[in-house]
Image (cartoon, rainbow, N blue to C red; front, side, top):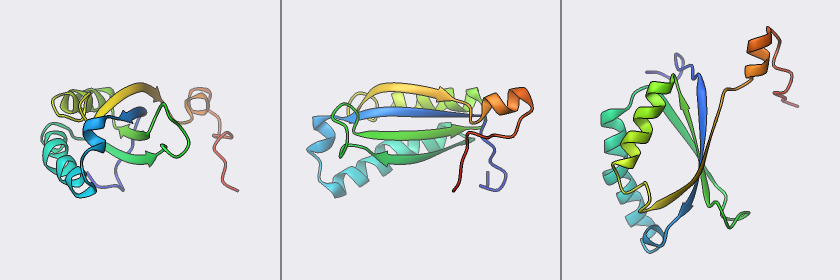
Length: 121
């Protein structure tokens, strides 16, 4: 799926807190763990999802990172969660603190309006 044709229908904001197991790894070990233990499961089981990653530990003690997962549909998102739960991502390297699901500009889409709450200045 190319980025030109990727049209997500929902976004999940996954708020996570790093665990001691993750923090005890060196940066190189973290990269290796993510690319060998987590990404293969996601790549094997999931289609129609993309993510963005935000560091928040500078500003919050409760949540250290936020993953924004965009999915083309609910099934793609559910498969993502199932894949992540089968890896050390879930509750070993990261504590999943909260998941917030949203639909971008749903109020506008549902009412036939332009999305006035999305602003670029």
